[in-house]
Image (tube, rainbow, N blue to C red):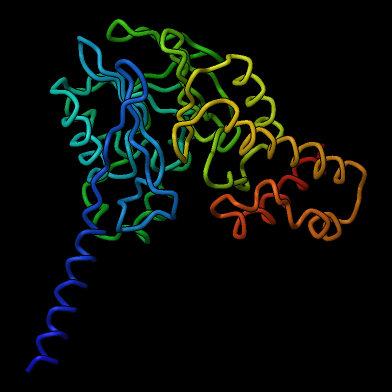
Amino acid sequence: MKRYALILFAAVIGLFTLTARADYQPRAERVTENVYVIVGPLGQRSADNDGLNANFGFIVTPRGVILIDSGASRLGAKKIEAAIRKVTNQPVCWVVNTGSQDHRWLGNDYFAGQGAEVIALARTAATQAEYAAQQIEGLKRFLGKRMQGTKPLPAPKTLAGDSVTLERGGETLELTYTNAHFPGDAWVWLPKQRVIFSGDLVYVDRLLGVLPWSSVKNGQQAFKALAALQPARIVPGHGRVCDLAQAQRETGDYYDFLANQVGAAAREMEPLAATLDRYADLPAFRHLDNYEGLHRANMNRAFTEFESQ
C-alpha cells in the first residue's frame, strides 16, 4: 500500500511539474524609470514556454503602454499582457516590432484586436509577410494546439527610411535597421533613458545564431554603430539586461571573429573544413549557452557569406 501511495504521489508531482512548465508565466523587471523588460528563457521554443524564448520590453507612459515585440502566438501575447498588468493598468496602445522572427511579431493580431497601433519599419513588415506561412507551420510543430487563434498580422503601420524617429505617448523612440539576424531587423533606441532594445543584434548569456539569411557583415557594422551610442543599458534579443562591456565581449567580439578571421579565410580561398577545424574551440565564447550546437554552423554560414563577396 505504501509503495502504491508513493507511486501515486510521484505521478501527481510529475503531472504538476508538467503543468507548471506548460503554464510558464513571463515576469516584468524594471530597467530604468518607466522602462521594463520581460527576459525569456534561453532554450528552444517549446510548449513549455509558448515560444516566448526571447526578450520583450515595454515603456509605461501617461497615455498608454508602448510594447516592444508581441510574442509568438495569441496565447503568448496574452501572457505578455498579463505581465504588463502586474506593473500598470495602462492599456497597450502601441506595439513596435524590432524584427520578423516569429516571436517578435506573431502576437500582433491579438494586440491590434485590443486597439493597439502596430508599427514597424517598412522592410521589417515586408519580411514578416514573406516568412509568415513558414513560421506559422514551424511553430505548430513546437506549440501544437497552443497556437490556436494565432493569425499573422505584419505591422500595418510602416515607416519609411533606414532610421526613423517615432513619438508616441510623450516618448521618443529611434528605430534603425540592423539587417543582421533577419533582413529588416532593427533596434529601438530610447535617447532620454539611454536604453536600447537591440532586437536580435545582441545576444548575451548564449551564443548568437547565424541563420542562412543572416548577415555577419551587417551585424558587425550595426554593433559598432550601437556601441557608438554608448547606451547605459542594453536589452538584448536574448539574455539578461547588460551593459555595453558585456555586449561587446559576448556579441561584438564574436561578430569581429566571424568577419575578421573566418571572413578573411574565405576571401583568401582557404579550405572551409580546415577553417572550421582551426577555430573549433574558442575559449572566449565556450561558456555561452548553445555554443556546442551553433558555433560550427555559424562559422560555416559566415564563410559562405564572405566567400561570395
